[in-house]
Image 1 (cartoon, rainbow, N blue to C red):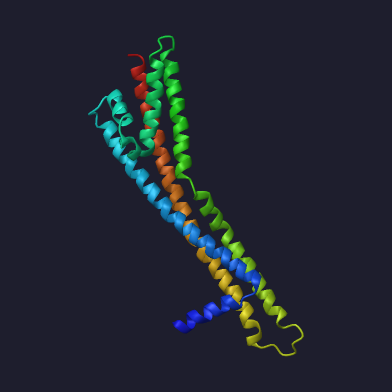
Image 2 (tube, helix red, strand yellow; image 1 turned 120 degrees about the horizontal axis):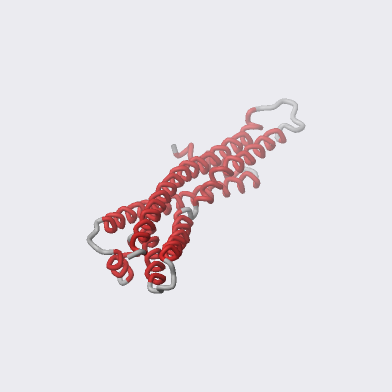
Length: 228
């Protein structure tokens, strides 16, 4: 195994400069995407758990809307309840502020609260989608970057045959090896990024649906309270 590892290292070190640059780019892309995969995984898991906790608290009925808002507004608990709690806080804050003015119609109060929640929803989704575009870029471009190294390695192999009357495997082997390694590294960088991007996109879509469902249900509740 040590000899095999050493031979791979020798191939990388002996590769032409363009192929070495391709390999370096792919290694950096792979390491960076792995770090982002682990970070996004933790963020999305936390967001799902936070949504579940807040929904249980909200629909539990133990506190009125005002008491729940004041409880979250005066404690650090809202930071641990994530996107759904932030949507609730934004909507109820705007609702309570405008409802104090008797000159504003109840319908306008609810519409303003709904707009405030929509803005907060967009911010929450932007935060959840952070780094996903990078994973998509790595997944879509890494094979082509590896392909560039492949083409260059094959060109190197053909150049080794220039002026040679009798070709041997030893003449073309280094260039072909460069090409194969560059291809493999491109796939190694791309495949995890594509899998993670698809998985995380699905998680974000599910969370978006949960947030939107809560927003609509809470808007209906505010409509009833607006006429009280």
